[in-house]
Length: 306
Image 1 (tube, rainbow, N blue to C red):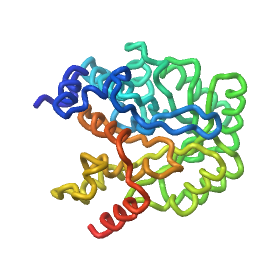
Image 2 (spheres, one colour):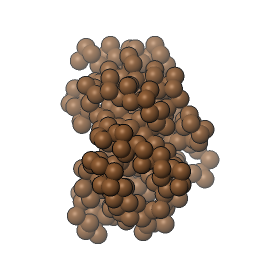
Image 3 (tube, rainbow, N blue to C red):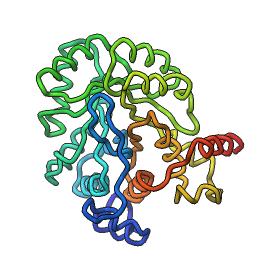
Image 4 (cartoon, rainbow, N blue to C red):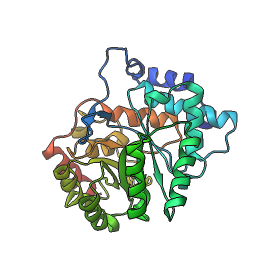
């Protein structure tokens, strides 16, 4: 099999056909569409599976590398997804996203989320402007204060830019469970429209405070680290999917993602991938049955016993 770095969208579609996914790759196919959740502050529907770009879109920009990234983005959009999350700290990722979307003429289909990650008002404004330029857009759908850095300063700028229609939604992010108390405090003080946090079968700390608070305050929730940087797969390596899970998941990846999507406070999960095969598998978690409350509890018991 060829390297995934040299895949084209045609290769991915052939694989999708082999997996029985091809009909679902067209929004007009009439097949089951991706599940959406409403953004509480607006009611806008957001597909539950998105794309993270940390490390995987930080590529030099060769024709082969860009084609691989374009394949992944096209699969996301063709299957009914929309949210692509990036950050200035992800080096070249914002520029790659912008280049891919511009080349395909698909900016209007994407929900672009990025972040501000610096100190000081002037530096923050420059960085946000650079993000717009790199992503080839005049409007960022979601601007997030990355890791709560210089929060007072940047959140004020985000609100200014929202008033000027340069940013659609405001957000706050973090990726560590140790920061969840600070996140909860910031949620109450700033009332962002989105938060982005870590949550998975292996990192369930948000269950006790932040996810219920987001639901109570009407804040949309993006989930990063859904696979704990691959560590969840290491826990199940060599094990078959349990029989009781095959009614809602076709793979371990879908098992892990559907545990998250089944939480009613979660709006969208953003697994990062540079592999079209993994993108297809991730997208499969966006439709079909979800585990109910009792099954989610069984998933926790199963995982904790590994």
